[in-house]
Length: 67
Image (cartoon, rainbow, N blue to C red):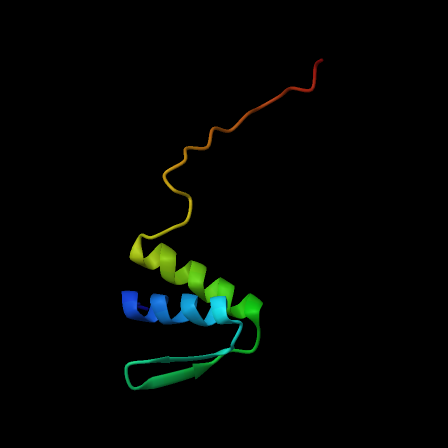
């Protein structure tokens, strides 16, 4: 599904205000919970390439357990 920046902005604004009803353009969406809104926000961020990882690299570590 393709998301727009306007949809993401509206959702983030609603999360910040603590409301579950989001209006953007001529549409209105009512979410069930804050958790659902956060999941959708993360999906939107990933889709738009606006993830919150700030470019940080993660390096895996391995251990054989032989200390």
